[in-house]
Length: 408
Length: 132
Image 1: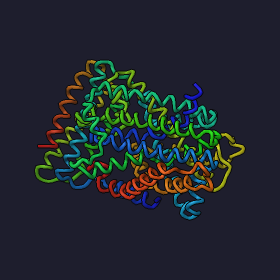
Image 2 (image 1 turned 90 degrees about the vertical axis):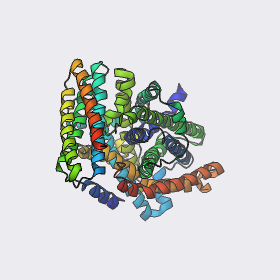
Image 3 (image 1 turned 30 degrees about the vertical axis):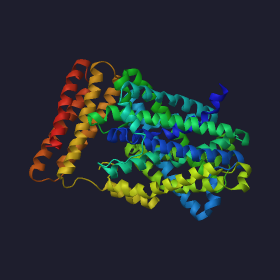
């Protein structure tokens, strides 16, 4: 039981980060558009986030430094500030989208007016962050988010052509519409490796007081947590490919995601899907809220940490509180959370190199990391993924404009 | 980054209604088809009691709003020749789909069964208009 609770950070990072509103939208849309042929991109994204999260957790456990400590030191104040602004903008967009996602799911559960549910989402998030200890936030949102496993059952129940599913794990390019295919590739990678996941993960490791003794737990967290996130992403894409693609349905709504579980599994499937989405998106909202405050505090050298409490870390507390209020205000204007999500994912992709390069540099620095510095395998993966990330960052906005956000 | 984001958001927001060619009409037809086909799925579940009342109402309304917006865009766009007549018919069809979805939001199981058939037919018609 203790071991199950210990991997909660990885599961929250995975459920609340890997399977957030961006992944729900992109995985389902990708499956509805290209069937199973983008499954291999999810594998690339999962391995990438495992590689870099493991590095972040190791750096945090050994050096007691979170990502933005390293960013400022390695990139200098000027470039570091650019990285901070980029990260914070993306994190803010993501949080607003997640808050909107929570309100939509509450609406699908209750049929109450959307605008009445935005304040309820705010109160729920505020209460969870304020009153729950960090470990209980992880457990509640991480494990309740596991209701999303209903999509694994739904995918199996829909009886897809498993040969085609297996073929989807082979890297390929759709020659029918290569630019839209590339757009979805970039979106899936951006959603899988979105920067706030590693900000949250590394700071969370410090919140939990990890030491080099916890490096095994770090590996377990990243492999199990993100591996699980990957499994859920596969399930979402397979469900969409088996159900929506043959019917010509283009998913544009959160409700469509839930319909993917309802059609094969009925009301029980629907309820589990909605509860899973609610907690996954709620967990992601908390991740992003904390990530914003972590980044700001670490960059400017403020006291930070949920464990310190508001009195000992007032600026950190104020940062996440103000951000949460602003995100709720933005979403209360009526802006479409799904559209906001797509922008957040694409801009995340642009910001990736500024997040991941400093991590790779610090994880290689023996002055900080001593015998725990990157080995050859971690460096090979780290460099390969840095190249992938650079391609994704350069291609993201041109592809978004050329393909009209994947509309062709 | 912030400047780029602002420019891109501005560019994306400036699309509005413009001239409608055969390709754009095809995309609109796909959107109408999608809403109708998804509405048909929802209606089938409503007919067999496999969805919740809240979900049916809220999701049908969301689909209705999306297809009504598509109808408005079609009506505001400028087209010529055969595209113009197909666009007008597609706009009417989108209005019909919106009405069916509105009825679905408050339908009993028997009514939902009938709506599933009608939405299915509307989805087929939208496909035909997009690929004549």
